[in-house]
Length: 138
Image (cartoon, helix red, strand yellow):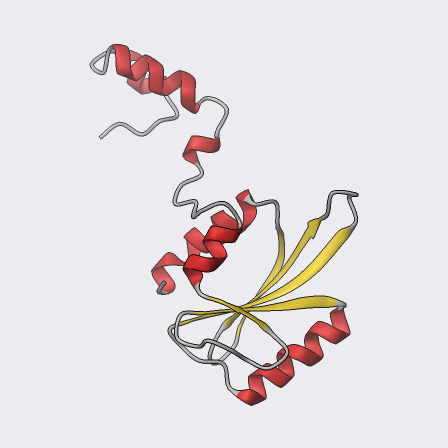
């Protein structure tokens, strides 16, 4: 996943119920500050370091550990080129997407009007309803 796919990551985390409070660009990764409530509505904090094809250095791993301890957050490293980092959960991008229900490449299908608009267009794609639909027409 390259920088152009970062929006997919953000949409996927948002759709999975995570609240994104901050994003920091570090030299080898993006650091997402996330929170999600458990089944008892108790908030759980996460720091997710997205490295893509980069690797997290041992120094960066130590900084992540300290930040996680300071914030009371669990640290998750997302890297497609690094299998393990001591004391951290490491997932590939595909593994992360799989654990949260799959990648969300567009929020459009989650909009309340999407199904109605799609059905309307399916019946008559040349109708003037195109001007009033939230579904983009190409």
